Length: 104
Image (cartoon, rainbow, N blue to C red; front, side, top):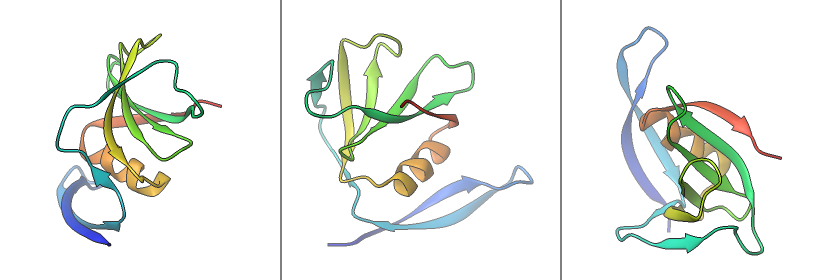
């Protein structure tokens, strides 16, 4: 099943424009917490908000997560599963996570 959604992306001239996202990303509609450290998976990339107070992380297994707390997490809130790096990047940019870094 391929999902399609329209999200708003900040363009280079600071205007918002529509961007079509097509993929298999499955956003969860319930709160799911998993304990840290991740078992049989690990963080591959993180996106931070301005100031670095909160972030989201993409695991190597394709889970989009929010570490709780941001540094030295005890838990991860699962945002979505079956996420590829491009989908994660688009999600991050449209939700205010503008600073990316590879973890490994």
